[in-house]
Length: 187
Image (cartoon, rainbow, N blue to C red; front, side, top):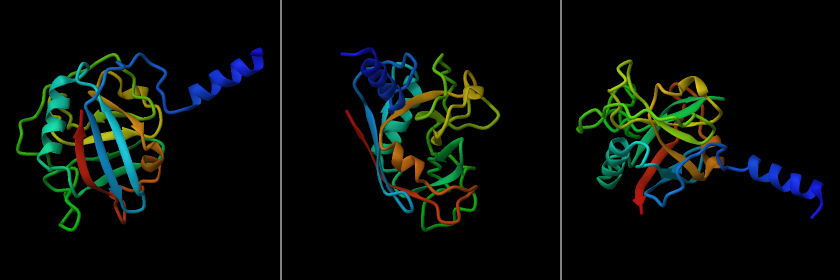
């Protein structure tokens, strides 16, 4: 194989959805999100229980209970991230004017900061100013955001459907928000 071909192959691999950091490559669980609205399709998030065990357990419990079904993407900032997961105020078809202010009936989770960087496709837990206030909301990075490193908990990474994430309607809130129609956990 010629040097040019090898360099082209390496460049293609680096340009793909893989992350250029040492993220544990252990099997599942995976969060599978069926998105409807402007963005249509399936997003698969590889959850990282070895990085944030309490956060992953809470997300998985909420998904298994159906709490995320029908929840909108309520804060979507171009070039930054798409936020969702407000199971209290973010249900589509209801009054979502307070979306982003709520959580779930489960307790808040203490921060589980790691050395993983917030790069494109990384999923982090949303929280208030208190680092120990994450509950149910999470966000998916559109682009690199190293300024979040060490301040927010990394819970996973998108391994399929980043094109769907890229198509999510922008806005705070979007005029016609996309919806996590069905969210399941697969091992």
